Length: 308
Ligand code: SF4
Image (cartoon, rainbow, N blue to C red; front, top):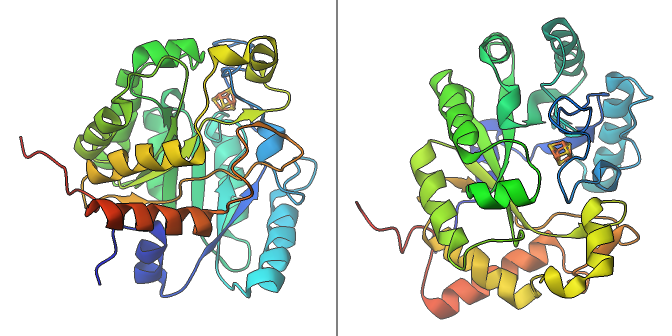
């Protein structure tokens, strides 16, 4: 039976012949939306510490973090190949010589077969893209681009401090340079239109992005959203698991079949998560529920794409 959607894991197996585990690291970068360049408030939902595993610590060198992560995943899953995942804050936001040094340190670590670099659309100028092109001659490079929404009203409401045009231009520049792009989106943000997932799928399909990484809005302790939610929870409706599955079905079925999907849930440590609580479902469990629902609907990735 054909898969109902393209999993990024199958792309990775096709390219590397095996599972490649991401090791998240905190390389000590900042973010223009936090350090005052654009804003000192950050995105409404931002709480970077909640996304950092125990071995990800900017006080440790990149090599040490990768070594700890490698030992952990080798013990837990028997993995032998790894991506260094520059995850925390905006990981192309530093002088070029600093970026080059940090990326090369990761590339030169044992069993690292590539870099995944998370960043914002306004942090990939021509000089950074040229650096990424140089490094892609040595290793596999992928940019995880924080787009979050293609709706400028929503982007303003969450204080992203960039618009959707900036996101589309960044994707186009990266793709023109041959750098693969994974588009990071959040569903359930304040102010979304009822058909936002359909529109997002259409825009991503036309954008040239290679992959999508999606998750639902979560309210995390320490974020500004957590304080607002505590004051007025009714103002921030959150998905139930069933509602989110329906949104993901809409997204997948309107998404080009050429695009790979990385994941649908974001793991926030339970002690950091305020809401919504999805009863401990993990990524594999979510994907089983999603496949079941797609089966019931008789739908699959791209099945509702309208040829224009
Ligand atoms: S979510 Fe990312 S872009 Fe937004 S403030 Fe936090 S680190 Fe910066």
